Length: 565
Ligand code: GLY
Image (tube, rainbow, N blue to C red; front, side, top):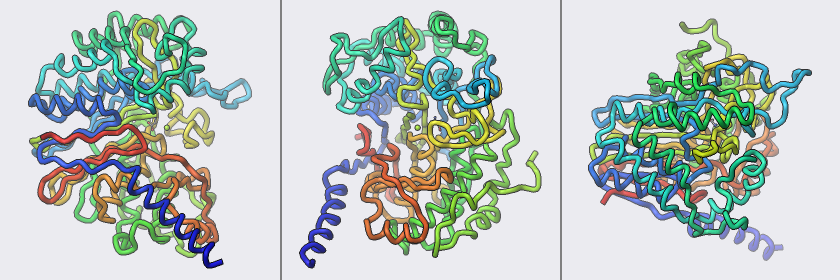
């Protein structure tokens, strides 16, 4: 019996040690600047732009277009995203380049004659595509803040597509796993399929000629090289071939929009986040507010109390998300009420450390009246202290799986982020209501949480991640890991995560987040758990009191942090 117990404890300890020692990436530090993205080639291109004297925005644009080539599952020109930017003088900005519902879209477009959601229609194939925003967003960022010529920023991506890049093990697997969908959704052309009709392997060379030509048109004409002329023509041809609904009018009228960032205090920190149509900024503000009064650093990251508090906060926040959040150009979002600190304290006050609050007992907060899962993230800080946090997405991995014939890029399936029917779960199990129903020209609600944190007015952290609904909870947990639990940036990113989103009831957990005995204790209190292989792919930068930058690049992916020498 004693031996069994010893072996059990040994396995537990050694599995944790294994996790913390062999799988985590080493810590990267720099005095001058840092680029963290999900692909080593994109991070290298971003760093080379900083080395040429470009600023953080220049580097971000170059990283974005590089990811569209070397990380096709999420890097994109056929999707959309959000940017939070803090310049070296401390001014903050938020840019919305989220996709839009096409003009010919309608509230019930994913329902059958009986009013039921038609499986997959909102997330596979041409009907799932929202009007892309990424290229307009990059153009607008450059117009307002770029310092190097646009061509210098796009050329590395053109070269990468034309000369090819070597596939990583993960990319090769991702392409192989999606091959049948690529064939099914693209009868007239073939992209990202091995020309020898065999599976891709690590270090195979992937050349993307049509994409190189598209990027060259963007290099020459900026966003007009995408929304007008030959690329637009190819998009419209693709729509016509498959009876899609995006028109030239949709493309010509697309504009990125500057919005007011959500800025919320937490102790002596300021959390700067993305406002609607992303839910990320409001949700993170609420989460941080709900845990602020508790002695988290004393409890530690692994304690039952910490885990319970975070699960209960997450449950409450997602209930509000489902009811209140949508595109502020179409619905009134009660932002002030949702981030009001009395409201937030009141919401968490119903939690009981003795037993779990079932999700069925939680509903969205009520206000007296209105006030008048694939994605990718990159975090960059330049030598001057400009900081940029950008999350972009095609939604699902490889988006709609539809390529634009002749243009060589994938279109998003972002329409699934709308609520196809009140209360019906989307791809991520998220439910929504009227605030997020489909309307022509409206932007679908997002969970993307590009975030910048300052401490006493000084830059402290830049952070974000892909992961659908788990984006919000991953950012929340990484922020606490670094700023409450004293982990360095790499440890904070690597530490195993969990995710609770109100509905469903259960909390998803990664291996090694809870010990078996701890999980049994929490189950007795009413918590339900399911295993999750991996949650999020966080890219983060922490500024140390010395001013040095620490990069955090997630071992869950090919993520790479590169400092400026
Ligand atoms: N497509 C994932 C999100 O925007 O939340």
